[in-house]
Amino acid sequence: GAVVSQHPSRVICKSGTSVKIECRSLDFQATTMFWYRQFPKQSLMLMATSNEGSKATYEQGVEKDKFLINHASLTLSTLTVTSAHPEDSSFYICSARKSPGHIMNTEAFFGQGTRLTVV
Amino acid sequence: GQQLNQSPQSMFIQEGEDVSMNCTSSSIFNTWLWYKQEPGEGPVLLIALYKAGELTSNGRLTAQFGITRKDSFLNISASIPSDVGIYFCAGQGAQKLVFGQGTRLTINP
Image (cartoon, rainbow over all chains, first blue to last red; front, side, top):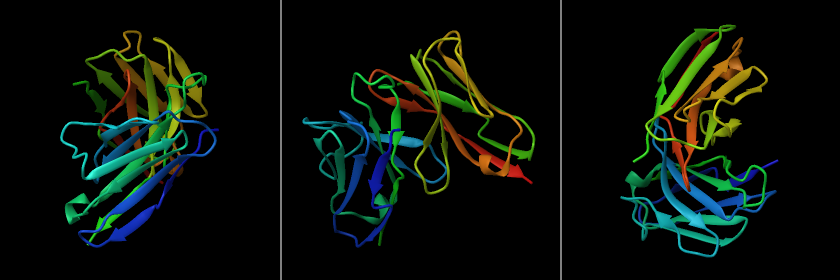
């Protein structure tokens, strides 16, 4: 199997505070993890690509100082939304790709998503 | 940049009907993936396609990777209420997945 666990599933925070979202690959190693943002009734928008042991690569228009990504191990990546504002409210989803050497290493498996509400 | 055009955007069908949706791209992809997303959840992988022309089934689902590697379709036969959700195609680029806009499937019992 290929299970990706994302935590928390829902979080409500006050404006100006920071929120950390964790993404774990439970039964495989993932050298690459991806963070997406999804607005209602829209497709997934890639925010950044996270490689284990190196700096994340951010997509154009995504503020790296606002969305801090850490990928310290082959099974864990974190996204921290710093100084959150109501416009940061969204559904955030991570995915993990199996490390090279796995048969299906090109497939990405997704976490359950995190619904962030900033009040 | 790379884009996928997925159609239709939404479908309203009767239970038991067959469903067909497709994706086209201006770019070639080496892997096509089909995902289903239910409300409040992350996408779940349904079918992965690795070779041009490949036809793959997963239960009542069948998907094909176009021979030009620029398109793919997904068929669902004999739809049931639990098929409701949003279906996304995705093309695997060198590093990233490129997603279609999604097809929202609604089933009337």
